[in-house]
Amino acid sequence: MRHHVEPKNMIDAWLDDEVPRLNRAILDGDAAPGMLADQAREILLPHLPAVGRLHPVEAQRLVVRLGFLGASLSRHYQEWTPGARHQPERAFEGLLAGADELPFRDYFAALATHTGKGHYVRDSYASLVRWNVGTLRVMRDGECLAELPGVFDDGRIRSYTGTGSEERFFLLVKRGEAIELAINDVLDPLTRDHAGLLCEDAVCRVRLATELLVALRKLFLDFASAPPEESMPPEFFMDVFRQFAVHWAEDDIPPSGALDPEALKRDFLLGIAIPGYDQHVRRIFPALLDSERAQLDELMTQPPLPERMLDALDLDPGDLAVAEPADLERLLGHHPALADWHRLLTEHARAAGAHLMLSKKFLFKPQRKRDADGLGDQPLVSNRAGTTGMNETFLERLTRARQDHVLAGLQKVAKAPRIPAARVASVSVAQVG
Image (cartoon, rainbow, N blue to C red; front, side, top):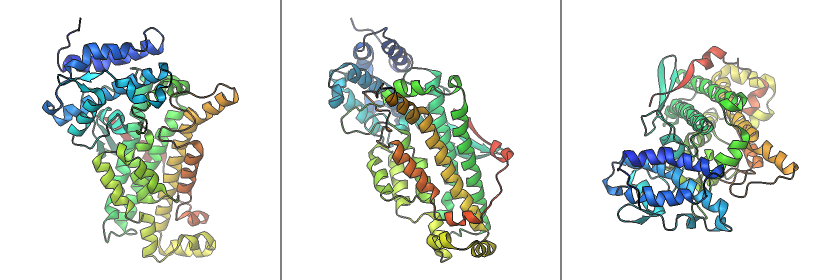
């Protein structure tokens, strides 16, 4: 007999509470791997609303919730069915949604379209992180520098297993993106035609962006240094959390921190010395939102800000690299703002290095130890690379490319004072929804 589910509130409660509970039970061996699919088929899916009757914000919320369900269904099916990794879409066979009995993936795709945001046809960074976690504000000395909205206002963070580790990780990632948004918003006016890049306003913006980058780096370092019970144990990250980032179809793009649009925008604002980086970003375009693709498209067609500044001064990065210290000192004497731009690019690279350190701590180093101990890799989602295919070597190349910025030649003489800890502490990220 089919259980009755009241529309809306009971649907939301089942997805928010029962899905994580069943996931825990299946992973602990206390429930059969197919139980989640059976329960979804019997209790939930027939009662899902017609997509066209939903407000776009309601569609966004349901995309978040069904994204967790879809990832869970796909994981359990692939983990327990021989050969299923090569036919991941079979995880959704017989799962029909709503009164019209749409196949689950078709229903999800229609729901994603109905959001009006250009969301991907499966779960993505946007739904798992930005829409899922409540609205965040980046504050500095009582001033709001940026606001990164969520679509829920109940203060809750949805997750695969309902654990604090997952909630803390999602919050960390969105807090990082919120600070990145503030950085990009501060720098964006400098991209306008005829914007002065060495004037007083530009220097103030560059210094504020630098301060925010230091705060971003501190956010990453604090999470890495926190005890496991206040962050996430590496083995949980590798064996539980990441294993939900499975394919829904063989060639789709699973969710990944590499899809953080604000980090991508900052690379194009400040420049990154690696050939083909734009092609790499375009390969992940389908998993971004419409507005993110448009913004990145625009930035890709413009020279990075530091290159525009050097062109205005008729300077070449290669000349800076071979110049004598005395010549560089004279250059800084004529254009002291160059030292501020150098510091900005240096902190951009340092923040990227801190992010790489997180990847090494929670993923690459533990997997190397497993390989050395003969324990191998996870069969579903490899721990030898990110879910978009970036391995440790490629991430190291990206970090070195950010270090090899166009003003790196000034390192010999540009000794900017460190930002006082009190200034960094004045930057905070508060959840307001």
